[in-house]
Length: 279
Length: 119
Image 1 (cartoon, rainbow over the protein chains, first blue to last red):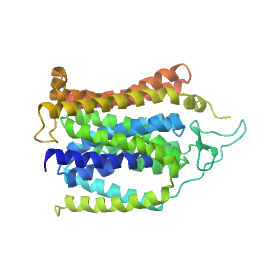
Image 2 (image 1 turned 135 degrees about the horizontal axis):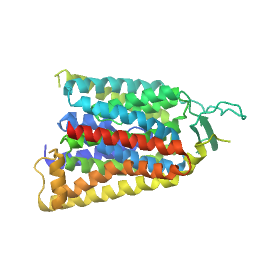
Image 3 (image 1 turned 90 degrees about the horizontal axis):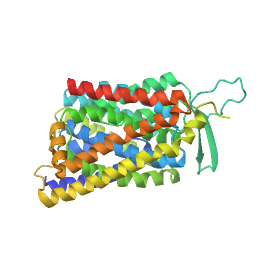
Image 4 (image 1 turned 90 degrees about the vertical axis):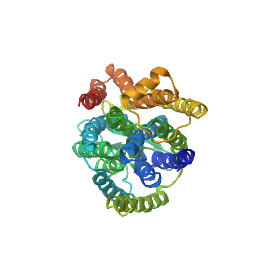
């Protein structure tokens, strides 16, 4: 494929990935890596390195907007980062010892999981925050204004050990296959920790950047960074993420979730076929 | 009333937001300059050519097109790191636990990077 054509496809794809990633609290690697490997024929480890840089771009752009809107739970995000970083470093080191086909199978399994999560999960309601001086409170209570219900919502982040474990797994997957881990972080915060979907999405974007940094540095030091495609993908992601961050508070998630789950099931099937040598 | 740490964390949002916004915006400007410079001087034969860390550092030193993009990549990677440093500094006078947490993450990232270089 001609270089300019490759870069244009990457730019347009990254733009749409930036929109979707910022709205769903994921880095976008889940889409970008298959497009780069299956669509553009780029080696999966170079694709993973590129993806990690673009995840930081998605994270920084989106988190900047969500911090302004007050959706991010800063304390909880920083707490969970410790575990995603640990998992990411271990995953990034392991990635150099594993076969690309094995990584693709892991990625495919992760996509199937993500598809089912996106299709069938429901948002938790805000947990009522316990009242009174003797009430047991989480350190990571959060509060944000939801313009859709025109209310300030308050919640109590619970099950911190479970959340820490999920964060380690999310980080591990990030290092292993170059995704942000948001598809693990968002359901873990939402379903296990009682963080409402909008806050979980925003806090996930806040965490993604730090997780990806840990892995990106390992890929960079191992000579897997391709500057040209990285720059093009980052520009597309940046513009898309800016748009997505402004759109997220205004739309309902139902239709988007359905489209998302169908799309990633298709990509998962393609990944399995490729790992099996059939594509 | 929110428990200790929560209000302080919420108040930190405008401070923590700045390095994210300026870091990523600066990186994107560098990427644009680097790509324009690249196509004006020596268009690449292969878009997905990977560079070693030494090659990127060499390009940065000679300030060629790949070097400018390389600085952009470093900007991107540095953005969350600067955000953690800013958070640690901000919380150091307000909440010791919230100040220590980003420092632990920073130490872990530095250790991982050093191990991958020394490996």
